[in-house]
Length: 89
Image 1: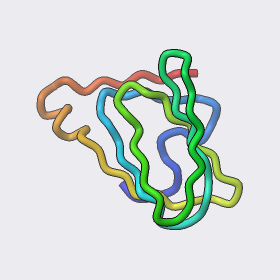
Image 2 (image 1 turned 90 degrees about the vertical axis):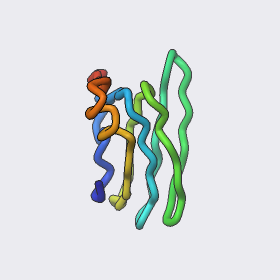
Image 3 (image 1 turned 60 degrees about the horizontal axis):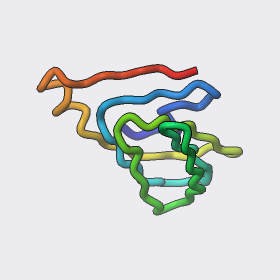
């Protein structure tokens, strides 16, 4: 999927059973990754790469917008009927 920060652009997060890898095409921003009460904040810019592990919540933010390319193992999870999603507010 290519496009603007698409996982979560508001205070609401999402946790999924698949892992997602991101490559930053343009722009700058930050992602807050959380699981089990632990949180990491990563700032990113062009040509950076990062992964959101399975069952971690990701919240993206960018002052001026950014373009991210992402891919995941979601199709494999869906084919095996093991894919799950959970919205977190």
